[in-house]
Image (cartoon, rainbow, N blue to C red; front, side):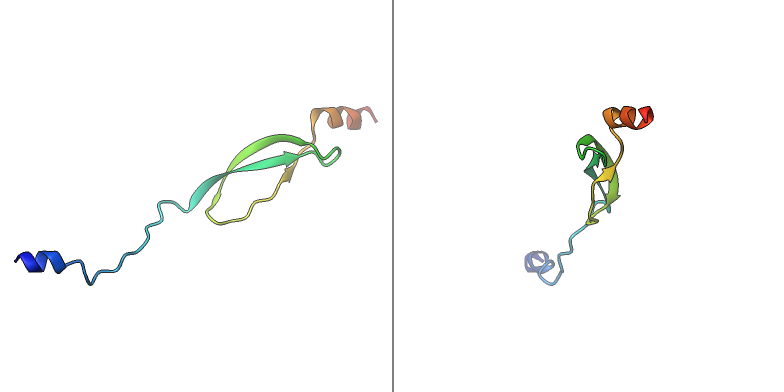
Length: 68
C-alpha cells in the first residue's frame, strides 16, 4: 500500500490553470491637439491582447477649439 500511494502521481500530467482570461491594464489617453497625456484609464481586457493609447481632448485644447 505504501508503494502505491507514493507512485500514484508519477503518471499524471501537470497542466497550468488560467485563473482569469480578463486582466486590468492602464491605457494612456492622449490629446491629439497637443500630444500630452490627458489622463490614464484602467480597462479590463482579454489577457494577452495588445493595447494602444486612446485619444481625448484636454481642457486647454478644448477651450481653444471652442473659442474658434
